[in-house]
Image 1 (tube, rainbow, N blue to C red):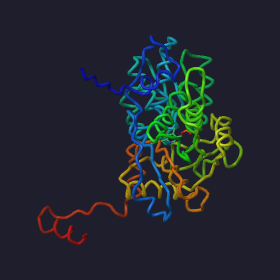
Image 2: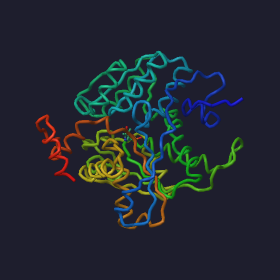
Image 3: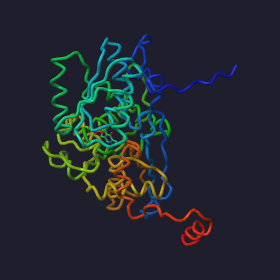
Image 4: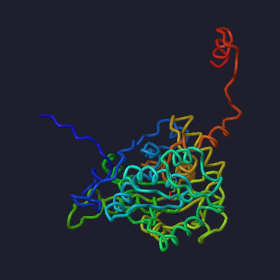
Length: 364
Ligand SMILES: *Cc1c(COP(=O)(O)O)cnc(C)c1O
């Protein structure tokens, strides 16, 4: 008999590489298994021979890679008997925490910086019914509060300082190796709290290292490239910064929680950090939309902005296979998208054949 195995999320798929047992109740929304899309038009624009793939994490259940970590973190919180989770968030973590809490039947508290969260993320978090606590302060302030509050209330932190988040997120590296048949030469990521770059590096290392329970899947590891927004670039400053500012709100972070892990990823892989202006990041976001039909949120585009810069300078040499993680969906931040397109705003004409025909013929 033909039996078709349904895809039911990263934990089930990579069960033997994740800390769950046969009896663990899995809290999943079918996250992961996101498309790895080879860019066709943008590489031609660079004039260089390079293969660029984007891992489109915006197609996860709540529209960002946070779901990979959240399915693990909430699964383990529930297994440990927790009735409530909490996070500080620039938006995507709160949307994800809220959704997985609903799925599990537990409560989610989210601390968000007032006025600094993209509209789509706020809409999601409201709809999922999380307890939203807006603070007069940025993400870093919220994070400090969350770390403190667990000493005063029975809540489990699901920010990426929760090691189960990193474990879930490492599965994106597994998927890339499974699909390409090997690790890429370079892996480019936007860096905020730096949990994700740390998670990918953990994943690549685990897949390239034999252990008692596993043979190595590959002997190759990529060079890790972490890109920040110029106004929020503690890894470039070499120290924490206090007033991070960028249009890419998902990486508007001055006190990265995975500081040491991310430096280790950079050093061990022979990689680097760099930073780009908001204009460069938004230009890369438009480039992806307008040349490939892929709409990611601003922070995500930092990965491509960095890759294109490093390809143009030759730091990433010709012949390279490059993967850029697109961390979130463009629909998360409609305001920033629309603002960029003011100049090309839709024309309005009379509702009659000739008027419509004229517009079309003028364009062709
Ligand atoms: C969380 C997030 C990031 C930053 O990831 P870190 O693990 O904090 O470095 C980047 N882009 C998007 C869309 C995010 O939601």
